[in-house]
Length: 439
Picture 1 (cartoon, rainbow, N blue to C red):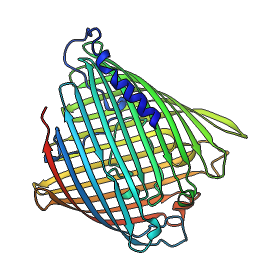
Picture 2: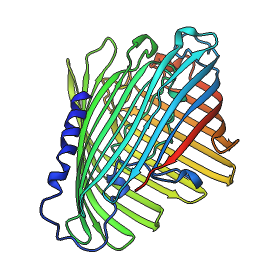
Picture 3: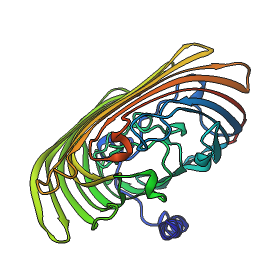
């Protein structure tokens, strides 16, 4: 991770030099980067949440009841009450050429009875977008998470951060109380070289590690690298059409088994329509090829259709995003390559000035593509839903009530097979203050 950050810093340091180069011949209004080729999540802020140029700091106190805190241990779930304190700082700064956001939230969770589960957490999310010239933009995104309580984070396992890209990592299996390190970094460069034409390229790096294997029995560490290039053509003010090539290479490290490698290549056509400025619908699809290899076993590969449908809507009082994807993927805790069908949705409503309701839901079905591994790792299915209600008590104090239901059916993964259901109810009280930043 340090090497990647160093490379990114060196690239950003060179940006002022690059931007002094020749100008583009592109005229007309700036094109948007369609969701199928942009790694950016659909915005979900409503009401006063949708703002920019601010510095925000505060603290969140959360108490939660979880009826299955020791997943994978014993045949009966064990319940407990947890308490979490999370200081938070957030920055959103916008200039004519630069837009940068940063959110950092460390925390500590302790349990009323299961003291061995007590642990600190780190949560960092940054987005850096710089316009080198009127038609060239570079974007750097990074999300880092260190936690032992995945359900207690700002970015829930399903639905909380939805993009329209097929390269978004699959979160097939969730180990709610296992120590884990997760990092997802992405760098993208787009160039509008004509009035209605744009090209771009991106690179993605993802890591998922479980430092304590006994807490994640049946799950695998994974590292992945990927890249893509795309061409986009603006048919009209609201219609975009294009093509993209995507490549990924994923290494999985099963416990007590040899590592395996999955490579995928996909050529996709995409179509995006902007029904309104803040409402879009995207379709993409095409052939995808995979190759799976593991020492002492024959390599396998084949072609399969890939399809992605997504939409996003951000209104003043309502926001909604949804994604359906049929792809071949690997990593993110699973060992091997899998056919994946997944659907995610997230919605927020500001019912009144002082009441906001949120709902996220997700469903995923995976099936191993390799017959020699399907008996040991056949795949499975998972479903999750989280409902929440927020109510500000004062200008700086906010109260949130929520409920999460998580079901996971993976018979060969011990960490979830013994007790596949998790129910969690929580109350969070936050104190924060905001300072505006000048342009």
